[in-house]
Length: 93
Image (cartoon, rainbow, N blue to C red; front, side, top):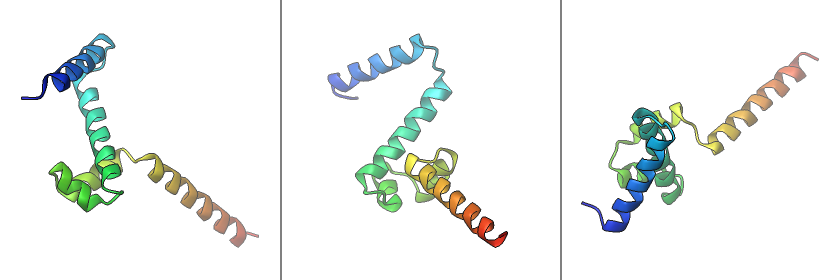
């Protein structure tokens, strides 16, 4: 299935999760988010290339990112919100 080193690493991670009360749905969610983030990083942020590497449709990545935005997406949203507030402030003067 996997090389022995990968299998032993996965076993150690699973043991840690179980010992620390992490549920299977929580672990699946965190793993999925990490795989997508790493796939995007290895694809230079290109969703289409990442989707091909990960074997999923690009809409799947868009959907997951809408549920769990990356730090970059969060910063962009905060910046946009700040710009909107500034524009409204100027109009109200």
